[in-house]
Length: 546
Image 1 (cartoon, rainbow, N blue to C red):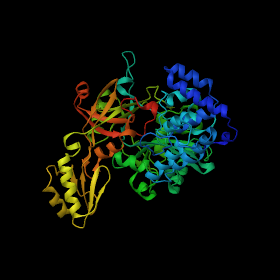
Image 2 (image 1 turned 135 degrees about the horizontal axis):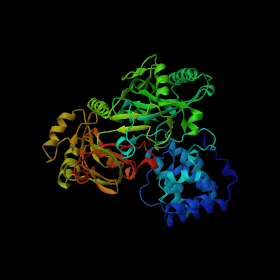
Image 3 (image 1 turned 90 degrees about the vertical axis):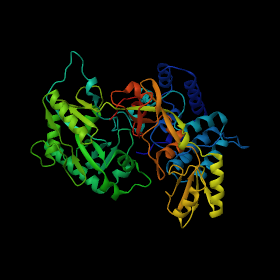
Image 4 (image 1 turned 30 degrees about the vertical axis):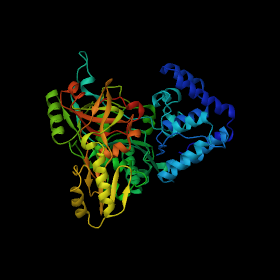
């Protein structure tokens, strides 16, 4: 659904100025309660709503301005600047109509002609950070979760999914585990949330982080497979085959990075590669009307048996079973004691799974984490923190010495034309291996961390620094995560993350620490696992997220 911008036609100067004043007040006051009260007072201001939707929503603008923006001789009016921003500038950036340099020039020119008082807010909006201490959780309290899709409260909208609690956190001395449980492998993929509307010939697909995957929705074969599954499940329940249905599962490829790359691809999305590389594994479902009510009363056992029935199975299987060409059902097993649960968990970890999902066979389907119906066990050597700072590297990850840089530049200049991208010197050549050997003789540090042929028919010399470590906040403590990165030229996370350093502050990150050594790990033993762009603002402080 496209965002309704009709309010722009009747927007007044007073409404716009009021929004700027509220933003300035939000910047100056402290305390979540006061901010919520102020927002509630101005809940109907469309300009404010637009600022929050654009800065905290999923739309990306791929722009980082270099330096301060000076005021131009001519300025445009307040309302005109806002209309241009919303209807022209932001869509062009989101759709990546311009190259990096052209985008910089156009945005700088636009901002230079805006009133300085509002320029600050436009600039922050483009950076997806208004810096006023208002996160998605605050907006949800005031506007509701339906705000992000621009629909009324009673219309369909994505408002989250069932989330698991840690097994060890779910019980107390008075509340003990209630066996038997059903157990499944915990998959290291990305959440796949399918909403199927057969009568409207439509499916909607989301990840857990509120990202709608329109590219995947456009795969016609996959859509028809979803309709087939919905028709089967509706038929088993005696419902009309066109009733809307929700399917809960996981996108899974060879590993998490491959999954994230395939699922996250937009501009370069390849339907054939996606279907070939990514499986969709289902483990639950519900009617959409029950999803909107936040609970489906049918027991997990009955839900899972109907899902298994759709595969033709007459009894539970521990392994995956196919429903269609690209959609599968995750198997499960019954455990009757803590010993059986631990044995299954050990096997799951030994086989390379993330851990174990534990489900109460009698439980309804609830779309939150405030229950003991769905639990998880993971090896206690991983956690999720927030990147607070990106530190430059030292030694081999630091900048080249001035002497080596001068030697390499002179040597390359004698062999051809140098391209300098700000991080590397590149020399195109038909004899890269020979040139590589020549350059190795003139510099001290010529390992692959500096000198490489990772670009075809090119010799490259890295002279800049690159990532040394992330400063990560976890449980109110900050420490460095400085290991576990790939650093070979051509597959260099340290360089990639250093180039993105401004965008990575505030991003969730999974890290590993020495098992049973979390207190020591905060100081020494920790390694990078992956970035978690799939998590929304209100999920960023959740330890061991799904």
